[in-house]
Image 1: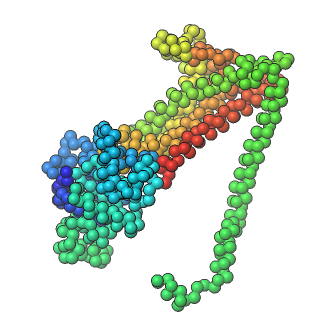
Image 2: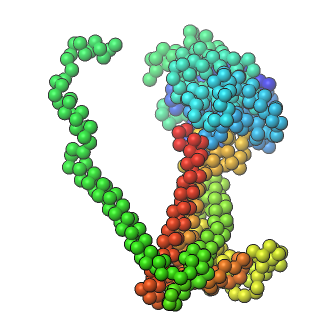
Image 3: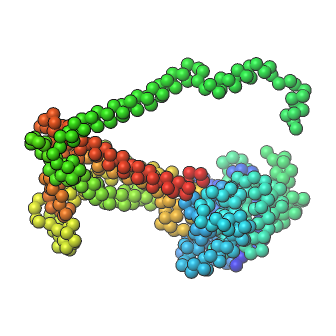
Length: 258
Length: 335
């Protein structure tokens, strides 16, 4: 199910403010691509253009093309709701539905998409929780509220919820920045497992994390505060962290930024 | 590591001032401002409790004077004759009228108020939502006598059509049968009360819906939820306890509403099965219309009825709190 993302000439605005400018890149299926760069460089904004979440923000609009295997996500007549059903997203702060049980959280996306038999639903919930390495911790309390879990467990619950609908792509916006190191490790291991089934794009502030989990790394930067963010380069992670082709990337990675 | 080496080289500051600081922190109020504020807030709190207790004692005492002389059953008598000797009066009709008119008001007002609040926060363009919210704020500030006059002069003459329709299609239920008399009935009162409590429920619900954390809404959006599905999955569950609180505020106003009911209703002392036939009464309306000419004893009897209204209000509030508390585990507070 994993699909390729092909972005060309993408520019995103908040009202009249240009947040990112002219970004083009290709994200290969069944790989992990990490976005790194300083705060405000637009990497989260760019991530949110990939599932049309950017336009939810008042004033948010996008120019350019995002192809998901040849289908333009911004083409005329494409329903953003349908786009978001095939491109899952995990957020910076774990956001399980607070009023729903663990089970209902995982089933939430499925219930939006159609009706399932109880047994089918049980199977998918179990498979998704296992896929998110959470099953053993919650199998005895599926009917308890998801908000009662620890932060790391909540984030894995959110991942289970996202993968339950078998998306083509999984977007992760700094999924570990609110978590402790042990929970972070659990999520990173999980990303390694998930990339066998999904195309994964992850925004991170943690360069070691990008180096650990990703196959490809994209470095974003902005010329000055108020200027739009740009893609400086995208390459194999190993190359970005050892021998990047742009000096700015090396400065950022080695801490000589700013 | 750093800190320990630092400590061995430079000794910590003298222990005495540190101890004093700690003691002060533990005691809390040390500066004049703190002491004054503590005294003020503690004093206000105690003052409030004393006033509440005084009101309760006063009401209970006066009420007990009246009830002890009541020849009828205070809870079940369909009569209010405090000038008879011995006096006969009971609150059955008033309790029924108060509860029924408030239920009608809630059934009509709550869904509409929630819908308006959702429209303002989640559907209307900002240019429309702002002014609309302001207009509804204004409606909440209109005095109840104005609603009462509007009800009596405009609403009542318009009710004939609705009543006729209800009678011909739902008259068989008994609840909606109509004898063709003046539509100064419980249903009209309920509709008027619904209009009156609509603004407050709308405003509080609107504030609650506006405070739904964006991350909850985005959680639903990212799963491919439509606007309505976002509202169902994120907004309504988060706002649930707030909407209940808002409804309780509205219900409080409906239960205690006096002038609007007194202006619209043609009261009598009977319980009517039909909501369309004129008659009945509510606690507040009965007190307002009888208090002026009542004897000393009559006033005590009215106070006794007021005490029952007070108890009903307490029960309703307690029930609402119980509903909210029962789902606390699932509330959005810790997320």
